Length: 90
Figure 1 (cartoon, rainbow, N blue to C red):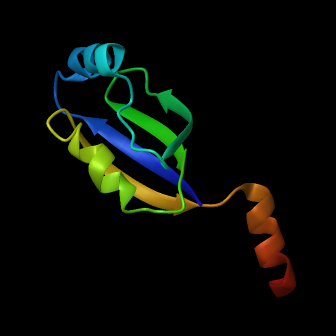
Figure 2 (cartoon, rainbow, N blue to C red):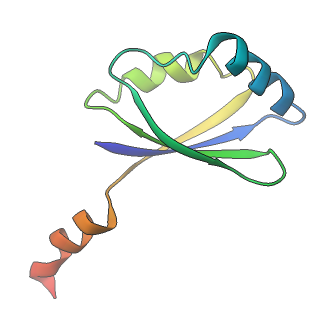
């Protein structure tokens, strides 16, 4: 299943977020797969698309970053999947 992770950096934390990532990597547990990400122009929010069959893995991953960011984790589907699901109701 896909998840959109909305990661809001704490005030002034962006340099430390990037420093930790450089030094330690994403620190995601096995079974939590990074797909892609986008960062706003102010370095305040990172939007990450991730995949897992075990959403409890987010607890481990976000725990490694909670001092620098707050997280919102939203289950999502692709546009193609959404079209397939909604088609019978059209």
